[in-house]
Image 1 (tube, helix red, strand yellow):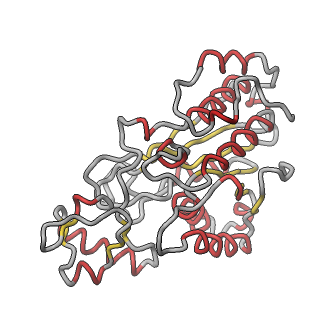
Image 2 (tube, one colour; image 1 turned 120 degrees about the vertical axis):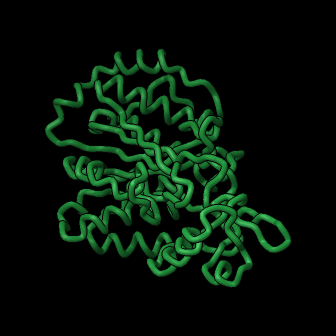
Length: 308
């Protein structure tokens, strides 16, 4: 299929508007596509955090290039609606007091760290930054991140806050998801993540440091097994350097002894971009990791490549 419905306007991608849900549903009904439950070869598209704050140029944690990435994602989705069985979307979801936001930390002068400040175990052990909340956990947390070879704790701007427009899926992509749902009679899946105050949650499958007993505090094995039931998984979203990369890392770790599962995964590399930082080259770091994962069997593709 190589067809873009009339409701899709590339110029509207990255702008905030009320989606035309009834009109898009009607367009899907008229598409004449077979129901998804008739698919013999089952494909799932996994969209990582395609939200206003990451994609829009005025978003609070805007990823450079994300608007163009999203255009390519939407067009890939629409052109392959007849082949995609299911769409699953994660949504980063935050509250004001979390370990990666300024209020959690303070220095001797009573100042909170600015966004994009890294907080190391050395900083905390020396008392340069002191936790306002969960003192023992916070010290253990920064040490655990470093011993597990995770990224250093980064202080982020407030983003994807629950109840704000920045939390929403960018409208043009939301319409494409609704269109697919209507056209294929397929139920879209939405997963929230990031609500645990005392840990980061980049991967949609697990937090950076496990918090047993908390909802979403450990590896989401049921969702991983659901993904494994599909013949192919395609992944796109934001940001390449963080939530996409950590999601793929969770997948590689879980399916380490099942290489046949890893070959099912297709990374749409031109449908994601990396966080920009004044000193850290996150994109180069991400490229190195994706290259290693490709050696393990993951497929690195572009949206213009034929669907497998």
